[in-house]
Image (cartoon, rainbow, N blue to C red; front, side, top):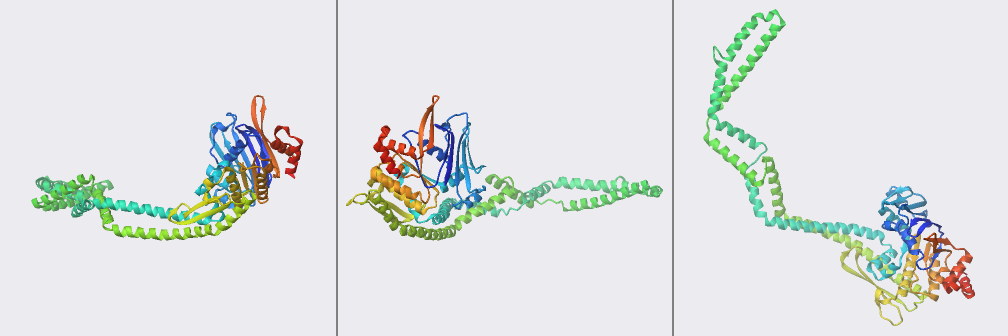
Length: 550
C-alpha cells in the first residue's frame, strides 16, 4: 500500500508531500490543475522512462519518493533475488539529475529500472483512460482471463517450453540449410578429402623429407668432405689424433708433479676419446652415403605433392593440411549422415510439441473453467451500473498454433441492449459503456488478486447521475479489500471516498505551481458543491453535497 508520496521539482510541482490512507481515496481538481502531472510522477516512480524536460528547475534534481507498506504481500523472495534489504515499510526513490541522468533506489540501494518496474507491478495498478480502450484488445482480454484463472505459473512454464521448441525448430532449419549446402559441394569435398588422405600426411614428415632430399641431392660433396675430415684425423704424421697422442705422451711424464699437469693430461685424454668416437661416426656416415636416383626422384615427387596441396588449400605446413583434412571429413560426414541427424532433431521437436500441448491444454482448461462465472459476475455488476440488458459472450477456441500464451483464440463479444446481437467489444460499446465494463472487470480482478493499490484515472468517463453513484459504490467496496485511489470529476463518486485530496494551481511571484491538499469535512462539502453547481455553491448544492457525503 502506498503510504506517502513526495514530489520535488517536477513539471509544475515544486514540492508536494502527501500521506495516503487505506481504503478509498478521492483526488479532484479542475481540468489542467495537474492531476496528469501527479500520475506522470508516479509513473516515473514505477519505472517509466525519464524525460529531462519534465524537470521544473533545470539547475536542481527532480526527486520522486514513495513509501510502501508491504508486510502483507509476500515480497521477500523478490528482495532476496534482487539482493535488496527487505523492509516492511519500503521506500522507492527516483531521481532525474540536471545532467539528464536518471537514478533509481529501493531502500537506498541503487537499482536498475527493470527492478523498479518489476517491484512496481507488484505494488500498484495504474488504470489510465487509454487502458479502457484496451478492452477490445485480445492481449488485454487474455490477461484478464488468465489472471482470474490463475494461469501465471502455467504460462511461465509454457513460455519456457515454447522457447526450447523454437530453438529446436531453428536448429532444424539451420541443419537443413547446412546439409543442403553440403550436398551441393559433396562431390568436390570427397575429391579433396581423398586427395589429402592419399597423400598419407603425418606431423613432421615434410621436414624429414626435405632433409633426406638434401642428403641424396649432395652425395658427391658429402663423400668428399666426410673423407677429408676422416683423413685429417687419421694421418700418421700430421693427423689430429696422432698429434694429440704425442701431446698426451708428453703430459703423462709430468702429470705426477702437480695437480695442474695431471688436469692437462686428463683433458687431452678426454679430447682423444671424443675424437675417436667422432672418427667412428664419420666413417659410419661415409659408409651410408651412396647415390640413389630412384629414392631422390620419389622424395622429390612427394615434396612436390605436399607443396601443391599447401598452395591449393592455402596452408603453411602439414599440420594445417591435417586440420583441413579433419574439416573435410566432418563436412562429408554431415552429408552422409544427413537423414539420421534430421530424424533425431525431428524426434526432439515432436517430443517438445507434446510437452507444449500438455501445458497449453492445462491453460485452456483453466480458462474454460472460469469463463462462465466471470461472465455472470460481469453481467451482474453491469446491471448495477445501469446496463440491465447487457450480455457478455466470450468465445474460447483451441487453435493449432503455439502462440505466446498458449494455443487458444479468444474474443469478447457484447450485446449492450435488449434484443441486440453480439458484436465485437470494441464495436459494440460506447465510451460510457466501456468505462462501466472496465470497472466491472477491475472490481473482479481486485477480488482475485493480492494487489495492494489500484489507481483509476477518470474511470467515470462518459457516465453521470445514478450510474456515477453506482460506480462510486463499487469503488468504495473495492476499497474495503485494497487501497483504491480515483481521480474523478463526478461528485457522486467523490462523495464515496474515505479520504479526499484536491489538486489546484496557484500563481506566486509570476510562477505557477501545482499543489495538493487534503480536504476536511467542510472543505469537502464546498468542493462537492462546486462540482455540483459551479462557482455559485448554492444552498441546494451544499445540501446535495452533504447528502452525497452521508
